[in-house]
Image (cartoon, rainbow, N blue to C red; front, side, top):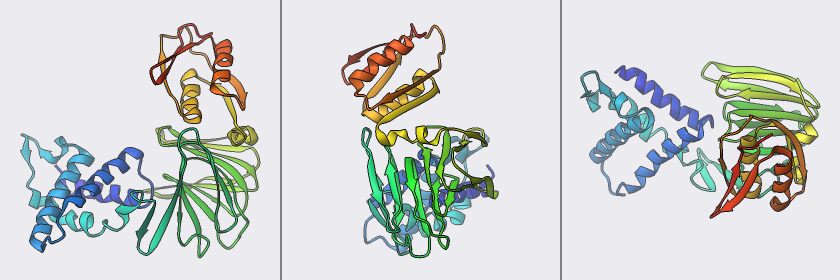
Length: 333
């Protein structure tokens, strides 16, 4: 195994977490590692700490890169001392303060506290920020706001979907971090969709101008400059590509007024949105006769009203089983 390479991977991943660029899976792995330190006794001495650091780093590499990747050819374990000394301090000392982010509603790192606002499935919430900006969170979404917000900068972190109405301030741009995508504005309104269980991040501009950047190991890349009304940028996480198109920004943010708008969407996509919007579990059954794409808008419909309309449009059948809604797509048209 190239131990220097594994060291770099571990440090790079932890740096991604610090910068808010990790995927949900990577975040969960790192938090599991952090939680393991709660079992350490308060009276631990320096020797014990070194041993604990060695073991924690070893377990971290296994969790992050797999058991197989901690072994050399011939199934011989790499000596811990060979690579632990180079990363233990980084893992244990350098990261203890900021690994707290996300564990508590308010967390502290380098003197900065973070307030987290979240919505559950089936819930929406409007939040007014200290600068007068208003954020409307869609279902199953989270936004984190630092305690120094509106002091020297206006940065927030978003996971999920939100509509932003940003107060104008040319001296302090408003920046939304959604993984590696940074949306920068001065004063405008726009919608961002960045759910962790989806493969895209999209930014739809309602008013004003928006700039979108990609931040990664290669630095900053401008992928959207001066996007204006009805401009839509979609970044694909799986292919690391993006596209610009025109779309109706009002319809893309119509969820704020209890409208669900689908444009050439598959049944799977529709079901995924319904799960979040109505806080239900949906199982798709049957082999489709055809893979249809559907364009439809549901305006302030209850689920009991929506499902018959969807069935009439698509040919699906549905039934409630235990705690799940089963949608059969065999007769889709």
